[in-house]
Image (cartoon, rainbow, N blue to C red; front, side, top):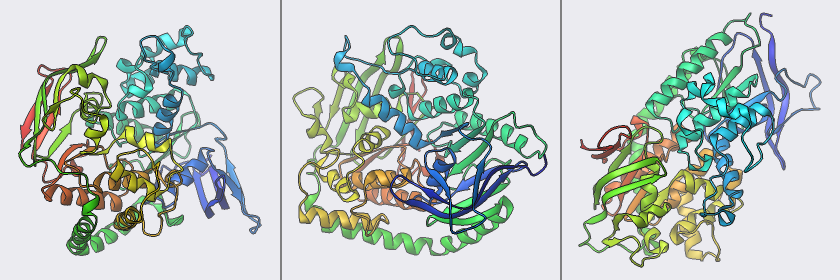
Length: 531
């Protein structure tokens, strides 16, 4: 069985519903190989992985006599990705029936139901008794491996980003599929979860390195936006760029190429950053009249929380939280998955209704004292998982309109844009590397590109507070560095205060001198740190 072909693609195209996404693809996946698929946002990586798992078509090119596509896994393939997680939440929100439910809350499918569907091979009927298999899930080794025993009965749409990713991984494992595609699997996971996943991957990947290994265990293909936290067991790399294969071969050779690329980038780093900073300042000045109204100078305390408690039933998320945000104090918010970080931010944005039962003041006024949601959002720039999902639900809107909606604080654009707004949007898109793409649909670009667009949308009005919940999810190294530079520049401008959630230490900004750290199993359940 040595060198046995698992997947063979010779001179094939990847076809989407409306157009050819990738042309002339040549790639073989054999026993004894453990593959990393990598590439910049929009470069073709995501389309390739979608094709492997059957979401797009791989079609032999009739112009070549040796064109062939074979895949021994057939439809026994499962993908875990940021896009899959977003699509799942989108589906849950579309099926929300809260208005017809007593008490006004439809929690939708729970993690337990979602996993039971994978075991039974069919949807579990809503409001019906759970099958016996679903009641035993705590004992499953896959559930223990992913650490989700405590959230099985939580609605999918109420899970944190990291929790939904771990639930998707568990479903992939429990489904007994023969091929698992893990796309950017470490994004949004806390340190402990990343270690668990990395150890699991290495265990499986090491088995893949044996030419004579049985096909009874699942194979894994790892997809990454950037070369970061790569398991040791990876021995082969497939890179996409500009919608074509730019490298295919051993990991050792690829690392030499990366070293050369990074040396060249580092040489021009300071010069490029200075030019980028000048471009940002120029655009801000040119579009100043479109910015949101500024807070009066005497409002030094922007947000104040006094003895805040949030929870559902026996699940207490925030306990006796006392915290305030002063103008110009940039904060890093950190803690393990499910510790309350997103809940904390949603109290500020107004997306969590328990804000009205707590003593929370925004811009000097207690929430619930007569202000509208627009009065609040006018003073906030927001990048979050929730916002990303909401924009995916109106994904036909153009990139131009997404940027313009940032000036208007709406999801999508419902009134005609002015010529002035269009000109401003064009400048911001050019700054972000999207020149000439104003009319492209939001839903047609990659997940990482969507994320970059939403960050630009949040920044355009130079808001008094910029709220960033894992803003670099799905970004390649180029986009990531550009976005981090942009955030640092915005913070240093003196007009915007940052609240930033991230699990990645490399994404912590120099300006973030204050840390709010959540510890859900301790008393008190938070710490305030100054660095």
